[in-house]
Length: 391
DNA sequence: AATTCGTGGTA
DNA sequence: TTACCAAGAAT
Image (cartoon, rainbow, N blue to C red; front, side, top):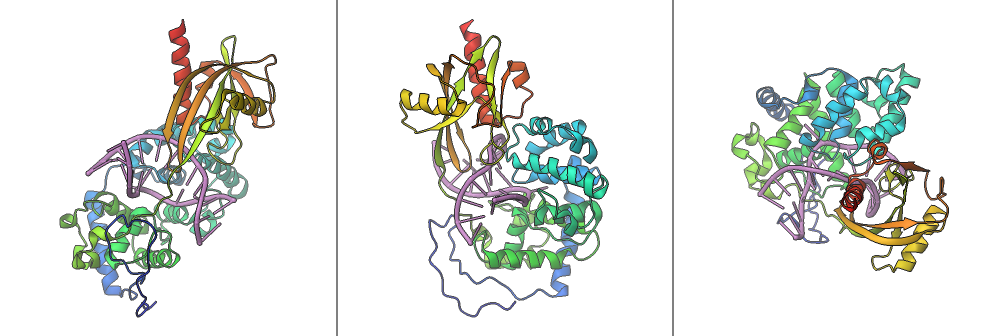
């Protein structure tokens, strides 16, 4: 993989987040055995001395390690710890998880985000029972066939739980390797990704591949950080091309993100006796499979009449908007979310609707056990607070 | 291949 | 307050 001789600089869209004169040259002659060893050994030794005491590093149970890897996808360590411990108590084995109702699994995931992870985890557990006798398969290749296992998670579980020399590249590893080997290109660039995986594959060969992979990630998380990296404490700075060239701050370039789109939902707060009406969303899309106060998308500036029509269509029965109870705003990565809560009434209480998987009349206590997004939980808190104040 | 999936932490 | 983004996968 010799580097391209002279690719001209390419105009980049948007504002370069890190001021950088980046070319599109990818890298980098294949590193030799000596260079690899000069990175591998110090990183592994550094890891042994400096690794954080994380709960999933105290177990060798592949199921528990798998669970940690799924929860950690795009999610910070401090957020995951309490979820991991709670979830593992509730679903201690793959068999227990496979046997549990999906609603219980989603409830255990409540607030963690990216809920497809929970549904894929559940499906994968069922596959593990039906195809592998309840035990996780031990190779990255086999793991890749399970729902929710991509290249990263397969490599992580194979190396950490089973000792396979399987590489992994996450955001940390991409940053560390980009700096060490001066790998150019924006996140998502095919050639860049291929180069990073190739480098990770060369480095992981050797003793303790799982610990080595974790050393790369730990180094990225604590020392080779995105901003203000601690190069003076870096165990491999002598071999780091970006450090040598003074380019640490500009590698890797930040990902270009689309501006969040506005999404306004009208929520029906329909009370009957001591219950409210709840609905389960479709499995695909935003908050897939989760419960909510029945929601209909409306224009940002929708009139009461338009909103009434939308909610009537969603619930499949006529409703009347009684009052606006409140508004909840949430920032998601790709959505600027506004929830408008309307107290509604109607002549006929629905029990099913084509727009939802399921409708259910629940007390607040029952609703607390349902899988629900944080946004919807906030909305619900608003309603319950409003009701309490009204008494 | 580019989008779409949540949430919370940090500077 | 805004921007960035954290142990990615699915479509």
